Image 1 (cartoon, rainbow, N blue to C red):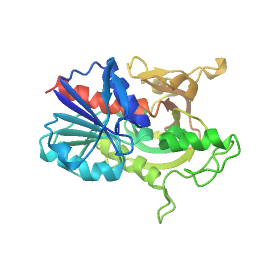
Image 2 (cartoon, rainbow, N blue to C red):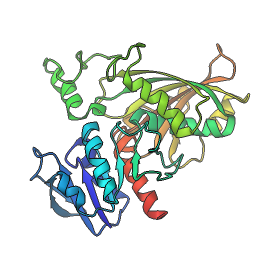
Image 3 (cartoon, one colour):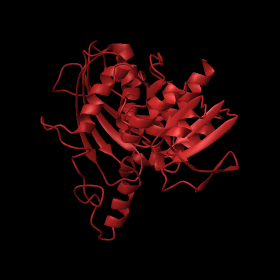
Image 4 (cartoon, rainbow, N blue to C red):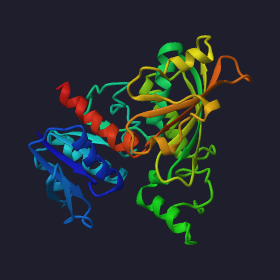
Length: 325
């Protein structure tokens, strides 16, 4: 199997390499691609040193079986169809392809690719952890409505977001965010649209429906950037179709391999970014009934946005494709 990783030197790209190693993805040949600026650097994969190469149109003809990409929307828009035209299956981490009708949007714990096209989209990082926490409720009780409030770490903006936080602590002006993130929270992720929502909020709304395959769910969201390096937190207010109890909601998360239930607030047990960072699972807690609405519950979930929210989910898709080839 011939594999390419595009954007290999970035924050997510380097984590993709770690996930390829962790999941023991079998390849006969591996090529690491980047922009011209980062080409020539060296990275280790499975103990072997690889020289990063510049991605050009000609290189898409090199006969790759699979290509995993984390290089931004404009790069994906240009290069993913070129790889696809040569027979490669592309798994893309950008936002560009997610809502195209003929493109699969995949979280392996929830759905499987149809491969209508040989481009598979990786969902938004905050959407991935949210739908993983939402799915047990959807299966057991049905979901009528969900209101997301996110608390998203700066690593979601890549190296620039981390720089704004770290340099902001020293008094530097932000270069990535519209306002300082150090000692602050910013109720804006991506640009504002005409209706007052941001593009990030609209991503969560639309992607939730597409991944679950259910346009009837009412979804709304408010997305906030917080001064945390790693891991996103999401507060979900969920209205269910079937009458149930707080205990039954809590029990729906038990014995699921990719979910860790931490829900004993009286004894200080609830998930935070500290527990979730560098972990592959989604952490769930603070489960309680909302007394202001019928059959509605609060659920708090935390996940590493660079791992499950990006690199891990991408490589899990690749692993599933290889296992079900």
